[in-house]
Amino acid sequence: MRGQIFALLLVLAGPLALGGCASERASAPPQLASNHLPPPIQCVPFVREITGVEIYGDADTWWGAAAAKHYMRGSTPQVGAVLVLRATDRLRVGHIAAVRQIVNPREIRVTHSNWGGDDATRRLVHDAMPVLDVSPNNDWSQTRFWNNATKGWGAIYPAHGFIYPSKDTERRNVPVPNNIPTS
Image 1 (cartoon, one colour):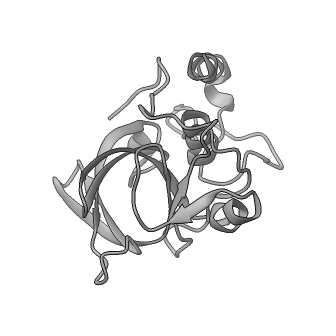
Image 2: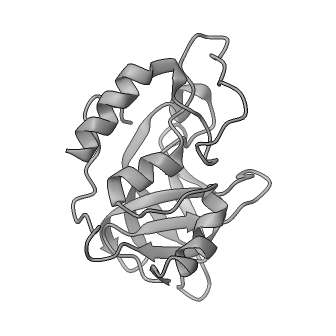
């Protein structure tokens, strides 16, 4: 039900949906891009909606906020957990994604939004995107995401790890809301 409501809000909000992986608090209304596409769907409210993890603020603040809110954190992926990427020059406010599937100890599939190198890809929800653990210690501290455009693995992104949903908010299937374009 929450997913359907979220999808309805996105359809109704259209161009008012916020972009980026920043918190939802915007100082000014977002502007339409020059090609008249609506702004990207932020990763933060999207992942919060599909996982039930009730953390607010920019993506790079989620790791610390999880400890303060008594969410368990770790370096082992679990379906329904939130993968938290660190802030970098390329990801100024970090990024988060929901773990959809465990392929093997070094590969998972995630569902997330506002990801890509151009306006078109950042406006999609990327469902079941492959992610590799490329860290030397097998601890998911360095990740690479599949790039559909190049048909290869993208840059290395440092990660904090995984935030595990509490039992009352756990969502095992990580549903994607209806009526959202997916890659």
